Length: 332
Image (cartoon, rainbow, N blue to C red):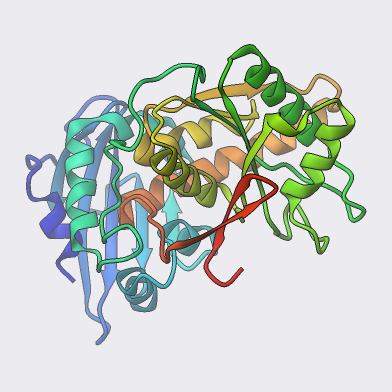
């Protein structure tokens, strides 16, 4: 139950309200016998600036972690992001404001705190370490020779037809590959209620559409059978390691780009993000999509503060199909 307290101890004591342009986050953890411990983290816009121990009612945000959520996170059976997204962690106060403090992910103080959380996790598929220092990818900017251009999945319908978002992302990724000799195209997306309910993985629908747009056999390289954004960045990190490349560009929609940038900052910070706009989408739909992602970004920040960066829970299964490598969860 002293996990958060021990991880915070390297920061100076700073009571809420003592730092300008800061957000105070209270972490309330529940033990197996119902005992509760309180710790606090003070975030600046570019780093963690302090901590406190004990109950401080003036905190801007309160994150309450039940024992069963702590148990599942410690056992490695569930991603921290999944615990927060599912509502198992109670979030009170001005928690949407967490999104504005995503820049702290690059700060030395916060990263040292997250390192301590990751070190306390049991060994998993990536050795019990979140590896959020990004050593798997060195060098930033658009993909060049030997680089990877990954297009993130967007919805398809019940017949496998791509949405406007999926078509715009895929077209942009193909153009990037064609403009960078030696770059490899990476398709993502398996199955999920939020984007693909067919019995065929999304990346296959995407590949079929790209072929109809003139994509040649040599331009399609690898596919990641991912289920959500955390899978996208973790699977991509493993692919970059296997390929031995540090030049990675991730193509996604403009409304999704901030959340992907945050997740990449935690596990693959050298990757570049290409944000695609969708002028044909109605303004009301664009506003709805942006609102959803802003809430999801705040929850992603909360998950990192509570459990450290997401990590692979099991080794990936890698197969080869038509000369392309397919990365899928074990058992898929």
